[in-house]
Every structure is written in C-alpha cells, then in structure tokens.
Image 1: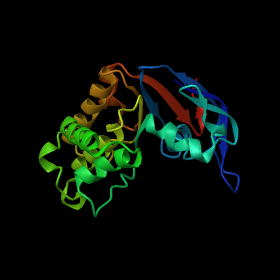
Image 2: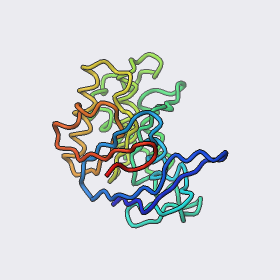
Image 3: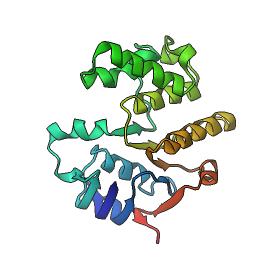
Length: 217
C-alpha cells in the first residue's frame, strides 16, 4: 500500500532530510514512525502526500508512483489519504462543521450527503455538540479532533498523522490515541509519526525508526 524504494530527499542548499530509505507498509497495518526531532519523519509523511517529491528513488502509494504524478493528479491521490499535520491549518473564520465540510465541497459531493458525512465525522471524534463552534473557542485537543474529523470525512483508506498528540495533556493524548486505534480497527491503514510511542505500542503497532534521515535496521 505504501512503499519507499531507496528514497533520498535533498533540499536546496544540500541538506539531506532522507537518505536511501526503503520500507513497505501493507494494507490494514498500524505503524509508528519514531525518531528524534530532525530525523526526517515530517519529510517522509509529506512525500507520501506529494507535498514534497523525492530527489532520488520512488514512493508508491496504492499502486501509484507519487513522484511521477502530474499536478492535476495529486488531488485524486490525496482524496484516498487522511492527513493530520502538526499545523492543523483550520480556517478560523469557519465553524468546526464548515472546516470538516470543506474537503467534501472541494470533491464536489452533493450538499445533503456532504452534510451527513461531516456531521458523522464530528460525532465520531466526540465533537457533535461543538460543530457550530469557531476553532478559536476550542481547546487544543478539540482543535486536534476537528483536524482528525476533516481528515477522515472523505473515508480515506490511509490515515497519516504527524505528532497527533504533541502539546496535549495526558488525558487528551490517550483519547486521541484511542481514536486512531478505532480507525485502524475499522480497516484503515494508519501511519503515525510520534515521540510518544507508549500511547500506541499497547495496540500492537509495528515500529519504524529514522536516525538522521536513514531507516534504522
């Protein structure tokens, strides 16, 4: 489902974020991506979503070579992915419901079905009572839940998240971890970059580790 084949990512100026990285994630797996800050975790996730392109090697997602996709093809790739990045990028002038609704509107889904899915996604993350709230009025954990609802509203086959429990208190962090476990239990392939492996290891997650841009054996 996700495959990296000898992937190197080099940024302008010569900084090499990833070096000769190879691994495979199969359909339905729950995988933790570990590594210290600066190890290359965020870059790896961005390559999966075609937010970055590899300098060398190939990235395959659901049978597609991501590095070879035309710009017009990238939105279709992303519809099969749920992305939860460190920057939530919520629209502060729109309600939680409107933020979650937006990807469905962009995809051209009918208004009635889009609204039904947005309501269902917010209910899934425990925010049904706050769907009319503006993001600025929500706590950090609640904003994270809105971002997760937005990521799952398109019913993705792959869910990737970059430090989804960072800066949350322990109780909120455990609740967010349980949410990702529930998506995995429903058959979604889940890849999580995290510093706090203890939140996910009880769920039997497979562990990959990056060390200074290289995959640890």
